[in-house]
Image 1: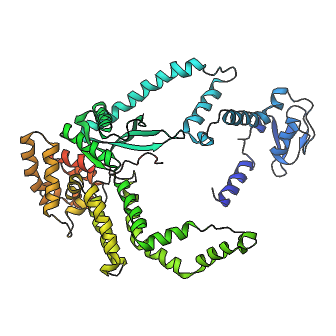
Image 2 (image 1 turned 180 degrees about the horizontal axis):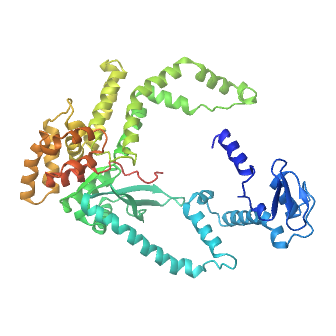
Length: 484
């Protein structure tokens, strides 16, 4: 709330006629202009408004003479919230519960339910929390999941695996399921004993696919480590209709790490930046006069560091924009990443004034990671089916893109009759026939997500529509949950 908004709020709360304050239950407004209030218990009149009058009721001896006739229950109302908040806080402190739990909307809802119950509320017992109400929550969660599972059958889904290390240094892998309806947590597995072995990782991934339903899964996304890559290949050998896809966010992270390792100006600049500490009191600090401090100060003031930072940003900033896109929940990225990677390389080339020797190594690093790890049929198919690109004058329909598209059709569709229909319907999409070429479809290209666009205008080609929605609804990243 702005300062002006806060002042207006306070003025409106205390203005004459406002009776939201609990103190007005026991006072009579004698003179609004002079803020005089008459006590219902002792009939004394107080100036200074409701704030001073409440001190009279509470007998605090602060700014007002205490009331000799006020009932005990009224005397205690002032401190009830304060005492309740103190007790809640003490509960959090003594239970080592993180403070941000108070931001959980269910925290406030729980307290509302307690106040509705009124005096005499008995909290749940240890057994009730551990057994009775836990079972009810599990049942409720399964009910909520039913709607998600219906969506999985309709649009397909991505299984996202995300590894991290807990405070006990155990390797943990979280599994989530992503679809247009949203992302839901599935399970968390201690992988300390299996994370190094590709065969065991394969067995773990295979069990997760079985739980979600193979017919629902379009892809499973994990990090790009060699053991996960091999496990993914084993999974694709067994599960003929789905893909293992490396995490795009992890791949771009590795590109940025390669910049630091393989490009001298990045190495030098990052090392220099890590050695700098900032402080508003630097000038008055005794440390500022030391030899090391003078070196740091010269580094910060010197122009070379800042020019080097600009050079590094010319390469890193375009990649970071792609990283934000694939790491975002705002829209599925599968229809965009293929073109975005090409645009990123072009942006870097322009940033270095088209001088090949200045961007050649950067392109090489990107190509090595992109071609070897990330360039997959799903990305090519997503690009081809995305109307934002397909109907633009810069659309590229080369061999690699078509190969990726038809590879996806062959793998994901087992019915030969349906494959034939999809192949035929692609011509209608390509040539913008029927609804694809309508005024509404053309207008919606820039306003709807690619999957939404197909859902709205692909009805004349139902087999292709279903296939396109499955591709364009996919995420490119496994980092929907927090990474270590």
